[in-house]
Image (cartoon, rainbow, N blue to C red; front, side, top):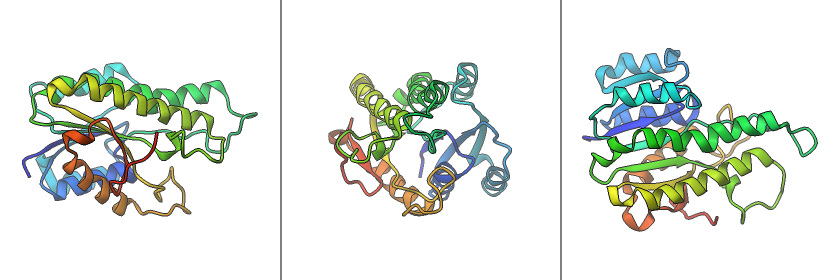
Length: 231
């Protein structure tokens, strides 16, 4: 596969598994993380060599975003996966949730994906039919919210969905499509041990879905099986 992929948040969980699966599919992968020296990423680097480029990136740091983008200067980018996410408020409720936590989750989950996408817009435009995949959550769906709570996480993912739709409209002239994707409730550090889907299954479904997104699906919201999710 002659395919170049840029993934944020690759130290563990879905991001790490997506990195592994795209490498195994033959893609050239730029894997970013706050600590790209992690054992898991270094193991993949030893196995795949120059097929994998590891970049330090805190997605809330505009200087680091610009530095990472400079590394790709002139490089067409087929797929950008904004995967880095934060759910620090898991144990908070309406009484205990702090505005600091809410701002942190909003920054990582909604603002940072836009900033990363904007920084790489030229690389996406240089590819044929590029795709930006926003790893969102069904918890950002208004229609699906039957249990309440999770105010900061839900609102940050709902905001990310709005960003995805706007970018889908704005980048269409460049030939770049943008979608919001729900990975399922995945057994990761974020999802917890009781989650229903393992990271390998989720990542495989996401990978296959990303590789098949067409113009008609631009601006859509789908789960890892390809099923559409109501806003």
